[in-house]
Amino acid sequence: MTLRRFIQCDVFSPIPTQGNGLAVVVDADGLSDDAMQRFAAWTNLAETTFLLPPTDPLADYRVRIFTPMREMPFAGHPTLGSCASWLHAGGVPRQPGLVRQQCGVGIVPVRIESGGRFAFDAPPTAVRPMDPGTRAAIVEALAIPPESIVRCAELQNGPVWQAFELASAQAVMAADASRVRWPTFRSIGLIGPRPAGDACDWEVRMLAPSSGMSEDPITGSLNAAIARWRRAEGRLEAATTVAQGTTIGRSGRVSIAPDGDAVWIGGQVHVLVEGTLRL
Image (cartoon, rainbow, N blue to C red; front, side, top):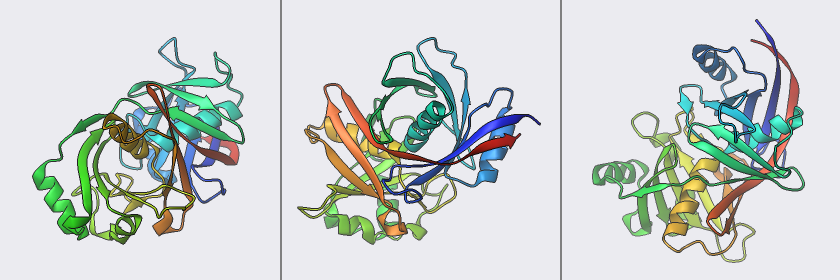
């Protein structure tokens, strides 16, 4: 066994422990794929990441992202948490204020902001019509009133999402997450507008994640895919704030900021645990 630096952080909430937890193995050199997967299953968090030297000369570091069940090519809260952990452990980016992370979808730029906040540029997202059979099965399982569905699509930005925009945040929160589980149902995203005057503009939920839970607390990659979807259709012209995790007692806050061709997905990161790991 090798002694390795280890960090556990909380991502996408202004309140520590109210976001999405992430385990980060800072020194992952020499670990096999099986060892990484076993450790990710042992942490029992939505994701665990492993930091490695980059193989792309443009990148500052390389990350591999594992749920308790499988490896992911990209994920949002692991991107921000890994970047914050890499910096906390002494990493210095080639370009001040901007970190370039190498992962399964390529290079993802991460902007260092103030107050423990970070933002990544949402990767390109493929937008496709949802398979009618998949749509019908999800609507039936979640008992979504058909009249509350504004639009839907299948989105892919590494992960594949079955995304539904509903007429209201109330309709989003009414869905019973216990009725859809991986692998029968996979990565369902719901979004609906919060009431006018609310501190947040949208409510988002991610159901049937591959982590084995019924609902993911806060999902940066889903929010990134939805933001790219809305931007492609001309429905994202200004910065917005998304709430997620409300129904499971979390206070997730995700900022969405269009800027030219970029769409920055931001949030706060808190380093809660640091030490060493024998693995």
